[in-house]
Amino acid sequence: MERASATIALLDEETQAFLASPIFPVTTELQNEGTSYVFLVGATQPVPERFSVLIGEIVHQLRSSLDHLFAALILQNGRPVDHKDSFPIFDSVQRYKRACSLGMLDKVSATARAIIEKAQPCFASSTPLDTILCAVRDLNNADKHRMLVVLNSTGAIGRNIDIGAPGKLLLDITGKPVSIIGFGDPKPVTIDQVPVEVFRIMLGSPVSDFEARIELTPQLVFERCGLAKQMSVPKIMPILAAGIQHTIDLFSHEFDADAF
Image (cartoon, rainbow, N blue to C red; front, side):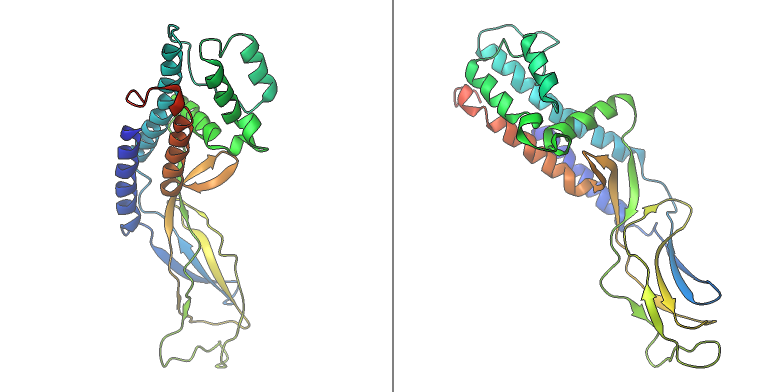
């Protein structure tokens, strides 16, 4: 767990530096015959593959911590460990009971079996795939086969939208003051090297010149984490680590204080 925490800190430091760099330029253009002022954002470079490597290391370290715990429980019960032994994580009650019938938990003590069962996502949550144990399991399994999908995504635009310039009246093409009749949906969008719309201002009459500014907050996200889409990597990684540490702590009474 110490290694996972150190790697999370390193990932956070590097991602913050990447997101703070000027690689997400915002451009603007008039559309719909001058009645929409649109903000576009693109990335001048892709997400470094190193971030995927670091994330893969973290989820592997978290999963391995659970497997080391399971091995320690077996040894504590006076039984040998083999390469097939791993901490069980099940999102299906039926599959869990079948694995138990085949001896999955026979090597650990009765008290350890009770704690393991209570911690299973299939018993602990009505949406087991959204639990921390399942998220770590699935991210680790994905990393075994390919690089984790990490995308650039904008967060919500800032609270302030600056429109116009001090002392300058915004006029439509007829010389009348222009009215703003609506705004686009400020939901996050995936940022690629091809600019995409992130926000728009809808005008009541056509203009040939308009000026406005927004604040853009880019972030790194998992394409999917559990059932959630576009989950912030810097936010979720410490949560996953804390959840795994909590699971490990459930078994503290199975060991001598000095050994645990």
